[in-house]
Image (cartoon, rainbow, N blue to C red; front, side, top):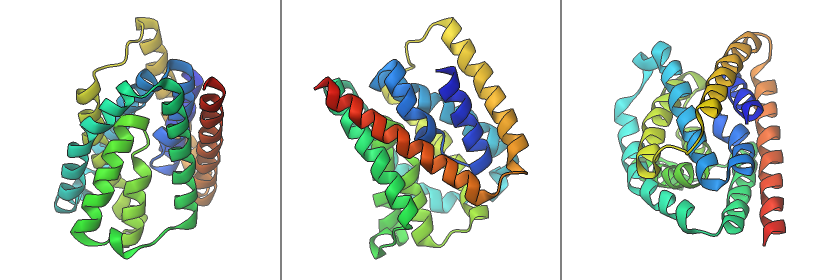
Length: 233
């Protein structure tokens, strides 16, 4: 568990996002779909909050309103899905979603349906559901940003704001994960170490390299999670 949190934190510090993609599949395999995803939500709150301390002035609140509002509507549905689906089905679904998200991001998928307010609502709704049920709400927002023509400088603070708010809503819908005090301490220590290492790597690892690492980890996690779900049927 500590290794997954460390890697996810490092990747997010280097790439600007991606804790859920990098760490959620491993956390789900270790803790189960509900606690694993909720722990990823908790980590998302902390990491996004830390990132916002330096970037909050660049948040475009008007652009964030439809994304966050749509996500708030679908988060409870995602939480309900996570609680009610049989674990093998949830594992397979999460693995497929993560794998598909990686492929969509790699393709740079563009569509007119992800432009304007309607596109923001669609992306927010999909992201809220996936964030609450699988811990991977970021790709839907990333695809919206790509189609809206946002630069990396514009995207980062807004993604951090979105991650903070929507992960808080997701935790509110599901409650905190049932972990021991030792497990929480391990998560805190490895997250701090991961953020520190990520900070050191950020100035040395090119953005393209960081992106490749993130997507490679996410793809491997998605495939392994799918396989575990299939074997458990």
